[in-house]
Length: 380
Length: 145
Picture 1: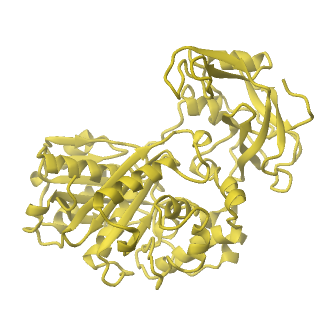
Picture 2: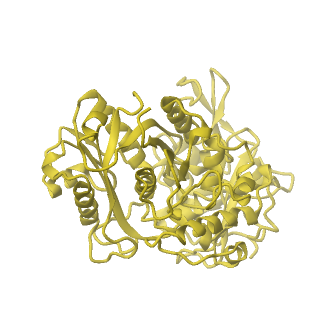
Picture 3: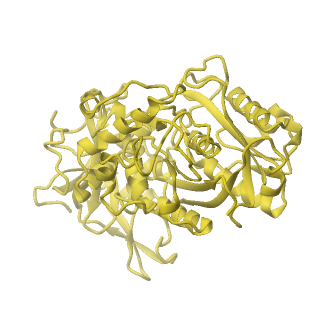
């Protein structure tokens, strides 16, 4: 895909984030969608392409009154929205549709109008993981990290510090769920969830949503918002079984997705002003920094410790506070994308001065899937 | 706590064998840990499927594993389900033959001090229902198989 051929022209989150018990899941989709459409001066009738996960696109189309000519219901977990952006950019460039709405809404805390999805007992995960007492992401996503710690020397303090630095960013964001500063000692003294992970190293559980509107770069010029161009994209999947991940210190899906996105964008790591790495748990930014090639193997814990990703650092990362402190409704990818858009529009609460290029990297279904979107506010 | 994470199993977490995995679950009932090996490229693999994930050959054989393994990684779950009363480790072990599998570690306190990465382990079979015996692992006593 040609870098800069397609742009994000509309972007918004739900009116409220955090605890939203007065809205069902489909209404969170609609609330975010209406906000994003208002952001760029459109109505649902202007939309001819839709994508969403966790709700059927059919549900969304009916609810908003959209008759699409292009539909994407890709559901690979929390990075589904990165894949939607990638697919939408290709569809717009190919002429399958002109204006795509991507929505996310999740009643992750209040459970209004949402349905828990269990593991099928006859699936491979159901037969070979479920019987051993796995109970959701905190007991699965976390399993590789002790291996990483032994092989690469990551310390408990360095892992805890990921949450500390992100809380600093959250402190600058009025919409963040948790804003009070924390220390490494606070993290290590917090409740154990799944050793070695404490509650402050695990994501929040909240309600909310977000939506994006994409169109061709040519049409983007006519919109009231500052276009955020899609420069490069990548996606991949590896395995739904955390026990079968090839390398416990590195995600194959991260490497494939990241490499593809950088190659497509034709940029180097030195060109990146702002970075989002989906942080459902504190080890993910560590794996992400290494697998995307920002640092060498085993270096990410020290890189974060040395404040390179903190406010004032040379690679500002997870500037909204991340899934650990900002919000995490279950599938966080949409909120990471929203923060990249805000940074490139120059309107983020913790704005990175002069940010021109942002890398937004997502993960889904534990280390099962990945999507990477590189965006810029200038045409290449 | 010593020993099994005392799993009075929730029936909703029992494996439901399929035609492709039945040999594995027949094996555990008979005290055998069964893997598969490709007749064409010799790749040994798990979990079960009737073709080689390396070369896609359908000519594969069921092979009995030694039962020897090492502790590869784990977490100790402290957010307990109703049917389990103390923190327990969810582990991944590295089998001698190459594949890794998820399991629980028996016969050892469920603590970071007792659960040391790369410690030698051996398979034991825990009967959890009339139809299902789960492969679990304990510190090696030099036996297995």
